[in-house]
Length: 276
Image 1 (spheres, one colour):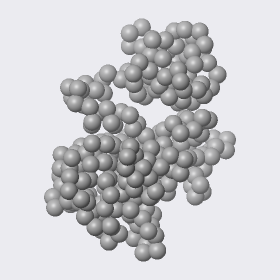
Image 2 (cartoon, helix red, strand yellow):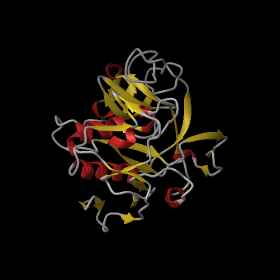
Image 3 (cartoon, one colour):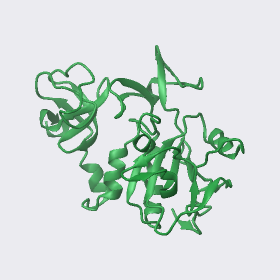
């Protein structure tokens, strides 16, 4: 993936530019990437929304379910994606950040084996994930991201970081907590940050191999929590001994695990299946 003249080259992205900006970034900016979901059904619906002159919103890049990229604002221009937002001592993150929109329905409502989005589209069980949002305390159902999207986000962020001095990668829900919930718990934000922002990892392949895929509980009554630490509340009944789980992420001695819900469990009480 390449950037030329503050735009992705045509062999990596379609260009569908909109004139919805606040001008050029100031010197040494942008230094932040903000990840969003579109809360819509398709890339075309998001593109058409940003092209609508009555909609005061825009983003730099949209990523479709198959990983296809569409750029709508050049990277040296301020887009209107963050809205009312703050991070550390900053307010109004538009002026500091590149906005990436991923086609995803967001929160879903379960009805039997069908999951329905706010705009009426239905999704299959395998497209849904039950998890607790880090700004909430109760589990909800969320639309899963595709592998192609996650790979495209990584490659895009990596390419942007090769051109601009990126210091932060944030979710919209982190800079606008309570107001926004994207990209939500279905997106592997911590893993993305670990791979891109931490230089103590030898390479991407090694980083990936450090996160096992399967394990089982080797203690009686293991709590599964909303975040990595005992200060986070349990989100379901304790897991019984020998419960098998899928491990999605690892952080500070805790595994993010997918069982009947997705939450965090203490690493020391999990036996990896590959070691058993």
